[in-house]
Image (tube, rainbow, N blue to C red; front, side):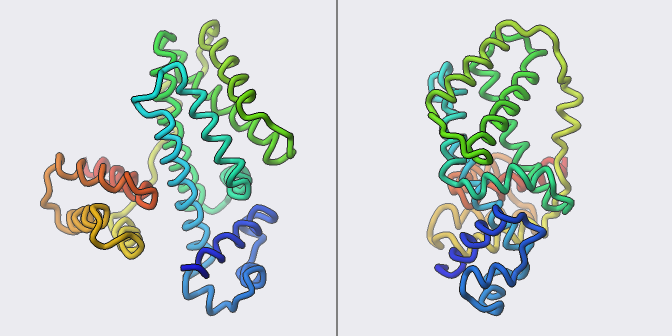
Length: 278
């Protein structure tokens, strides 16, 4: 496990410096000081390593921002909490944040693009939830424009300290963005983003039950065997192979595994699989 963690950390440094395509397994093993054989003990390919990195960091990031805007938080603080957590994570995981900002736009790998898109969709849902709760008096037709406003400001300001190394006071930055979004929420009247457009850009990728089962088996080897998360994964996996569980029980099991950052991605894909069957 220590060597696997080393590979992930050092490869992320290289990806942030040169990008996914330009980084070779040879460069990764040299940076880690290990043989190619040692690399292949942990990852079947560079693509598998990339997907593992994306899933690890994005699932933890999404779990953190979901907690920051949970139902028990004051409504007037939701956007600030979202921004502060987002930028704080960007600072702590600067290498991954740089990769995420660049590769989701530049990638020509269809599966990689879809993976990034899937996580972006999850983040959009969280932002839209914030908009609906904090700016509930805003005209419904303008709420999607607010979502895109928040996305644009977050990306633009994020690049200031990630790409340009600008010295940032996070508290001041978050308050500045909240102020700008609030002004737009109170005064903007021209709707640009339509529900149809939003739906078309947030289509889910097709995911097979075999792919989900493989992911579940991999994660089951990493979580504590006697835990409720492990037991829930087993039941959900068995249901995919041979459906026997009720919708209520499935929802309860998904709630169990969502409590683990390692399972966020699986829970999301599982929900998509259920929706595809309807």
